[in-house]
Amino acid sequence: MTRPTSSAPSQRMLRVGEQVRAAITQVLQRGEVRDDVIEATVISISEVRMSPDLKIATAYVTPLGVSDHSIVIEALNRHAKFIRGRLGPQLRQMKYMPEVRFRDDTSFDNYKKIDELLRSPEVSRDLDGDDDEQ
Image (cartoon, rainbow, N blue to C red; front, side, top):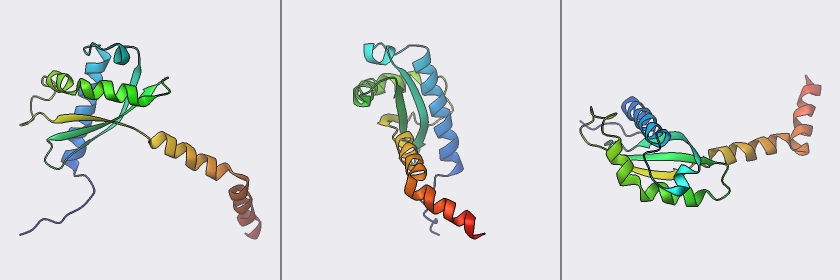
C-alpha cells in the first residue's frame, strides 16, 4: 500500500516545528549563544519547517533593526550545532535531535509588496469601479 504524497506538512510536522521554534527562541532569549552579532540583535523566529522524517528543522528568522540580514543568518548557521545541542532538554521526547538550519524570512517583504500593489492608484481605481456597478 502506498501513501498519498502531499506537499502540505502533516500535523506531526507542524507540532514538532512549533516545539523546535519555542526551544530555539528560549536558547536565544537566555543569551546562551556567545556571538557579538547575535547578542546585539533582536531575532524573531516566525516559523520552523520540519522535514518529513523530522531530522531537519529549517528556522525562518527575521533580525529586527538590522539592514543586512545575511550577517545574522551566517552567525546563526555558524552556531547551529551549538544551538542543536542546547535544544536537548526541551525536545527530549524526540528520537533524533533535528539538524537546525537558519534562513532569512522574506514573507514580510512579500506582504509589503502585495499591500503596496493593492494601494496603487490603478488597483484602487479598479476596485472603486466595482462598487459603482452594484
